[in-house]
Image 1 (cartoon, rainbow, N blue to C red):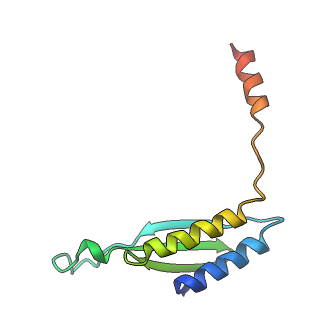
Image 2 (image 1 turned 45 degrees about the vertical axis):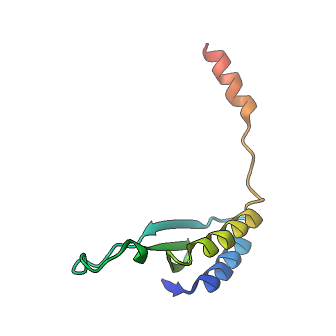
Length: 103
């Protein structure tokens, strides 16, 4: 797994989305980084960090601190909006027909 800076992570994530546009999937996970076990007294809430991972056979990750989270979130949401245009729409008609038949 490759640990990247925030801007580099976003560029690589864009490349993953472009590569998987026609076929394939990109898996994204987000989790809170845990505090070190021995430093409970000196640990402040302002030191919180998030770990973001993306995989498509190639694994990339980044750590975002609480100070950078607003800037990163804006760039990340713009990236997702730009690259999620190929999603299939759900067919609600078949659902409503099944529910009417069941009643």
